Length: 485
Image 1: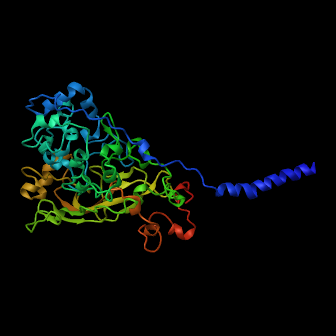
Image 2 (image 1 turned 90 degrees about the vertical axis):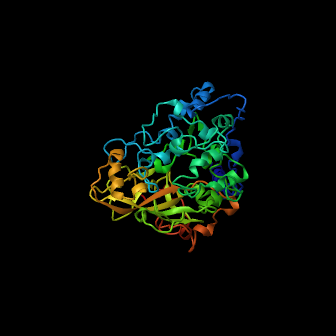
Image 3 (image 1 turned 135 degrees about the vertical axis):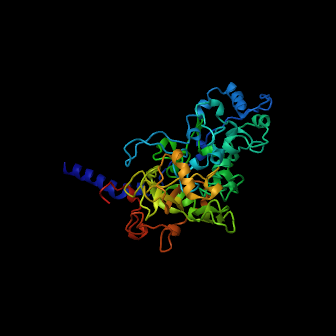
């Protein structure tokens, strides 16, 4: 009996001391990183040149022709924020009633609000005829602009109020339709905020024909936007932080839609992926080709002084543009902690964060993520203590009379905000997640870019006691349960 016990003890000892360590030292199988396997297969576009006859007197006639073969297309588009420019009602902690958020009804710190200049802003709306002159019929399917996303951009362009630009041949545009390309998406998304690369810093006209070192997906592999922003029934994955409060996980674009959770050969790199977003290492800078706007001072507008697109315009004020912009880094779980709602009270003595990313070191769904911060000086009401949205275009607008007081009074019935007659200037910030211009692996950040005395991350601001490299490498502190930090 004793021999049997000794034999069992010896077997267990052998297992613990010899076999288990050997097993752990052997190469471990990891899921293969095979992104090509998960790419969406696009249907071969049908040549419409012989299918569409015309003539077309109005752009709505083109949409009617499209709906003959695609009867549900307009209704599908009309359910998306590309059409409504407004999200569904959502409950936020600081308001008693649900609110909606979107370009249609809220404030940003670029052109401030489309309510001040619908005639021009809606050039990028997926419809025809939205202007301040007359109410836009959001229920009319014939107002859906199919050509904006499907026509060849060499023969089609949108103009004021979203109508086709003067001189566009509607028949030629309709015959040219195809699957959406970078040119279609980029026409608006590269030029948001009033010019090329103004807003995002990672979306500009260099992506129309990018070299591989600028964007590995679009340059080397010739991705179209819809390869990542996958679309079903005209609903496009990937929504903008600035125009939402919360974004469901399934409506976001994730690198793991194609890539493995552990995509690297080196396990030291894979160890980072639970806490560090892919973008943090693989997008080391913004605006490598075309400069992006990082500061806008509206208070200087209206002065008669030399003008230049990158420094000063009388109608808009002073700017700062930069190239090779290093991102700022925050914990981010894909949602907003706060989104400024029209009429929210502010403290004008400190910056107002218009869209604050949600996430912290104790949030298991958050990762360290790169952002562009755009800082602006914009108007607020001194008595009511909220941000003001002026009317900029048209008779009485600031760009017409250069009179701020008149522009705020003209805005009252449109924005629904009372104006006290006293205005001032306050600083605002907006965070823009950096997700495009993904560099090849050889140009990704290296260890010393984040760790060490010259590292770019502010570890204490992120919630760490210091550089994790210096205290044992417990890098995944965001997995610590709430209250145990």
